[in-house]
Image 1 (cartoon, one colour):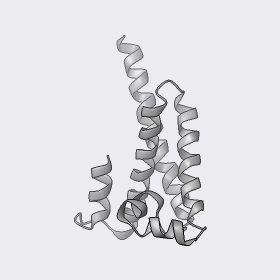
Image 2: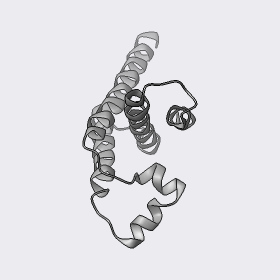
Image 3: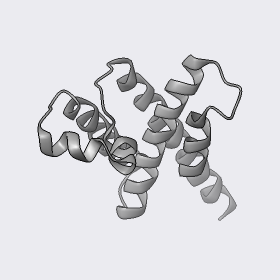
Length: 117
C-alpha cells in the first residue's frame, strides 16, 4: 500500500491533479488504518477507524505548528511523507475516505470469513 501511494503521488501515473493529490492522501490514511490494525488486531473495526482518523487529523492539524525542530523533520523525505508540510483542510475529508474504504474492506473480509467458517 505504501508503494502504491508513492507511485500514485510520483507523477508517473497519468492522473488528474485532484485525483493524484487527494487519492494519495486517502492512501496515506489507509496505511494509517492498516498500521493501527496490525498494532491492535483485536479491536473493533469502528474503534480502529476512530483511532486512525484521530491520528490522521492530529497529523494534519500539527501542520499548523511551526518550530525549527519540527520543520527540520518535515524538511526530510520521511518527515514530509509522514508529517506533511502545510495544513490543507480538504485533506481531512480525503483521510476519512481512505479510512472508510479500509473499514468497508475489513468488514467485508470479516463477514466473508464468518460465512465460510
